[in-house]
Length: 304
Image 1 (tube, rainbow, N blue to C red):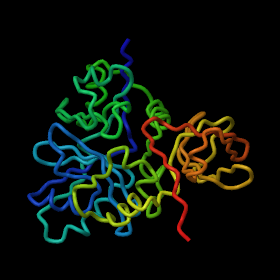
Image 2 (image 1 turned 120 degrees about the vertical axis):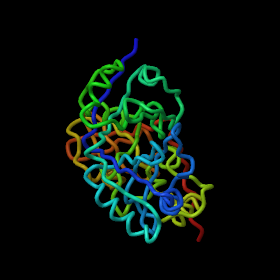
Image 3 (image 1 turned 30 degrees about the vertical axis):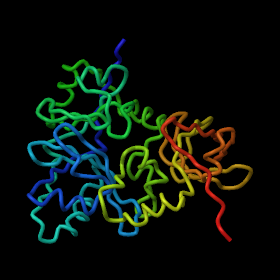
């Protein structure tokens, strides 16, 4: 039986990007290939420091020739400011669309079928005066929608979705091991490939140079990945973000976001590879659970 669920994400907001130079401008500063965004396809991407460290993650989808950006609501002003620094004389507009649009997620068994969307990452279509698209990272996350503010819940109910609290979606996301912006990635410190961006379709290696591309490519081709973000099952109280995780008295990772009984942790690669390893954080006991999509490889010994 279908179990179609929907929720509004107040933690996300929208920008509307336009102008004749938009795609050329974005292509030089974001991690994915903006030319692949069409009315039928959305994508997930990141904006990095010149040194290749994380600043922002977001979704891009096309509507009426413009691009709609779904990013962290509390940090959209920072993203807009940082992008504007690179605009120079380019004919590009960056407008806050939070008053016009709100972000929803639609998930659960039968969700994509109810939306008449194929189970293909990023597949997109117009919907209810806005748009809806399969999550470009994993179709098992369901779909995301950018909808006219004030109409979203009614649209979802009319489409057969039961409105639930955001925590239900957060639990799914964490179970699948998918990061959520600065809750899971440290601003100006985290590296994309340690946080699943390659497997989750957030980086394009054929698009050419982008801001931070040199370090990102070096991390991949020189096997410099030292840590990975993975789900952990938790017995006891959920450790606060930033709490060190210990194994045998040694720190092997750090806690990121969590909900009851589940969390995400950034773990040293040797700990990430050992699903039998018991981790501790205060009164909590944790075990690693690696999703099928995660590709882990042991690091080659360093040359001496």
